[in-house]
Structure formats: C-alpha cells, structure tokens
Image 1 (tube, rainbow, N blue to C red):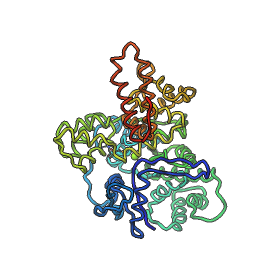
Image 2 (cartoon, helix red, strand yellow):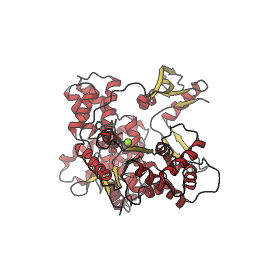
Image 3 (cartoon, rainbow, N blue to C red):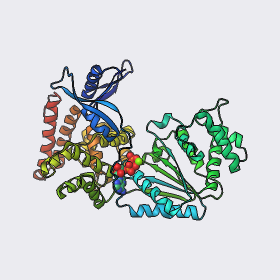
Image 4 (cartoon, protein in one colour):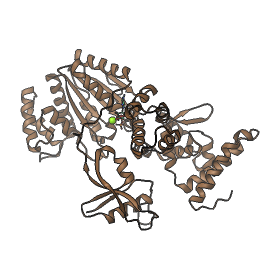
Length: 503
Ligand SMILES: Nc1ncnc2c1ncn2[C@@H]1O[C@H](COP(=O)(O)OP(=O)(O)OP(=O)(O)O)[C@@H](O)[C@H]1O
Ligand SMILES: [Mg+2]
C-alpha cells in the first residue's frame, strides 16, 4: 500500500452513464503523483496538506516529488506518524466568557445542591469555543463540587455509522476501567458494579450494556430495553456520586444514539446529575425538538468571542506582535477564536515580517485549509436551493440583495423565499435594510464563493454586473465602480478558465 495526499479544490460529480462518483482537479493529480512516488507503506503529503494537518502529526523533511505534467516539482513531505501529545504545549489562557462560565456554575450548583437533574445544551458554530468553555468549567469543578465525577461520550465525524460507539468510553469511565480494557471484561465488571449499586436486574442490565458494542453474542436486542438499561446505569451512578455526563459534538451522532441519549438524559427521580451536551447548530436541523418540553433544560447559545478577548489571544499566540497585526487578525476573525488561532499559526509558520503591514495583510488574506474545511462542512448540509442561494449571493460580496439572486439565475425564483428563510434561521445570513442580506461571517461568504467552479464564477460575475447596471439607472456614477468590478472579474476569470465571453 502507498498513499498520496493532497489538499485543494476539486470538482466532484456523478458520472451520468456509469453512476460512478468522479473527482477531478489539480489536488487529485498531485495526490496521484505523490502516491506513485511513494515507497510501499509510505504516506506522502503535499506541503499544503502537511500544513493543514497542523501540530497533530509529525512529518519528515521536504522532498521534491516528480511532477510530470506540472510546471514545477511538487513540494511534499513524508508522514512519520501522529505526534505524541506528551510534548508540553503552551496552553492558551481562557479569555472572556465570564457570563457563560457563571451560568454553567450556577446550573451545576443547583443540580448538585438540589439533587435535580439538569440538562445544558451549548450550541455554536465550529470554533466558537464550546469545548474550551467546557474545559474551563470542568477545571474549576473540583473546587465547587469535590465529590463530582465526570464521564464523557465523544461523538466522531462520520459517526453516523458507528451507532453507539461513543458510549463505549462513557461506560468504561462509569465502571472506572481503563480505555484499553478487554471487551470480555466489561460485562462482568458492569454486573459487579450494578449489584453493588442496587440495580434490580444486574445480570440483564450488564448484558445489555455490554451488548451495546457487540461484545456479547445472542438475540438482537430490543431498543427500548437497551435504552432503559442505560438510563438505570446513569441514574445509579448519579446516586453513588454527583455525576456530570458530557456528550461532545452531538451533531455527529447517529440517529439511534440521539434517541438513546434523549432517554438517558431524562432520568427519573432525584439525583445530583448534570448533563452537558455540546453541539454545532446542525444538531437542531436533525432534531428540531431537542430539549423541547423538558424540565430543567438550559439552552446556551454562545455568541462570538468579543474583540478584546480575541486581541488578547492573538497577542499571546504571537508573543507580543505589533498592534497593527493584532488589529488585522481581530478584524478578519470576527469573533471566531479558532479562526484567529489558525491565522496566528499561519503568520508564525509562513513567517512574514510582522512589521510589514502589507505582508501581514497578504498572509492573513488566504484562508487556512483547516478553517475552510469546517465551514464547508456546514454548507454541505444545506438543502440544494439554500446552498445555491448562498453560492449566488457570494458572487455579489459580503452583502447582496435577494432580488439579485434570480437575476443571475432565473431558475431559482420559485424556491427563493424559502431558501432565504432557511439561511436566516440557520444563522448563515443576517437580514439588512430592504431586501438586503449579509453573510454572518466573512468566512461563510468566502467558502461559499470558493465552491463555485472558476468558469461559473466568470459567468455569474457577468450576470451580476449586468443586473447591477439595470438597478443603478439614475445613479450610474455611484454604481460604476461596482459594475466595473464585476465585469472585470468576469473577463479575468473567464480568460483564466478558457472561456470566450461575449460582453
Ligand atoms: N474563551 C477562550 N479563550 C481562549 N481561547 C479560546 C477560547 N474559546 C476558544 N478558544 C480557542 O479557540 C479554538 C476553538 O475553540 P473550541 O475548540 O472550543 O471550539 P468549538 O466551539 O468546540 O468548535 P467545534 O465545533 O469545532 O468543536 C481552540 O483552540 C480554543 O483553545
Ligand atoms: Mg468542540
């Protein structure tokens, strides 16, 4: 086996004839070249992929790969493996969010003190700081609740196929077993604990808990019975010790796991139990009723981090850069600490002279691949009309008018109102005056724009320019610059894509 990995834009399509899924593009070609050049059992990555992989992986030195068909040799690096997390990393301080921490602590104090189960759902788009907030809360917890025990289920991307897997770690933590426990040891350990804890049917409950991950043979299990077993286990654990159950990244869970978690999170009776669920807003698309109608339910929607906190973060990461650099990153990050952190990383690694404002602006202008990928994942989940609307809107810029959309693509007129509602509801766009819409975050606009093939961008800029021209009758001068911008883009992109544009 040899692997070549590369990162970049590709065109993905289903072949009409064979039904095959095809991807083409420069990134695919480069990956193929790297793969051909790799030794067996080697993974060779393009420099861009290596950069995007960040600090989690170790790479060998730069090698120049054979690049037939490409002008210059491809810069590549050999993957050596995952980097051990033992390397001491300078932890960023926790910044801002005092009110959010206070709200978590208040709720936790009530759950523990009044012995009433509470559920807190923390939602926010990728990189807003849900995990960091939770870590801060958990770090302070021993002071507030010395007795409390914390167990975590971590949902994984592509987790829809790993039905109940995230509960595996949670069960081991409940039983106090190490991560690498032999599957056969789980059931007896569970049974012994359930007996001690006073479960009414310890043998059966243990069997069900272990069967969640297919560690026992036997009849296919009944869902209702399985869910009840999990609920008892969590209730019993909470009666033993005050318990905090965390579910991370619930938006990635399978549907079955969502059902199960809904049951676990509705314990009967009194117990000092705090449940904290972290999710991106997509969770509410999958389960609009999440949390609805429950007692003791707290929904906490994180706002962007304020500019002062972002500035402090940038200052820390770049170890006291010039103020102008901080300002540039703050303006670009718009309250997203993940984005700010990645921009700081870009500046550190690419090493432009931080005292040269134009070099800094240029370095910050390119979107780091890691950020691109997280935003793209969100756009990919949109229904077709909404996705198309946001793509078309991106051609106009950070703001656009609803009426401009059918002007560049008449076919979309019908579903437009609904598509726009969806985008507003999902906080991708924000309404402005009249029929104007603005992208909530500059990132969303940029990534949406990048999903358009170059040739299409050219055509759409042409259409946008033409429409804007008709809209500006009587104010031609005011609009001239904007109209000219679109026509210029149409020609430049069209030429690059080899399209002959007839103005
Ligand atoms: N209040 C904060 N102070 C300092 N750094 C922060 C803060 N909030 C977030 N960060 C940093 O920003 C980055 C993204 O935060 P985090 O991972 O918590 O986001 P998230 O909302 O959990 O995103 P995802 O949906 O991808 O899981 C992390 O590197 C984190 O350390
Ligand atoms: Mg997170």
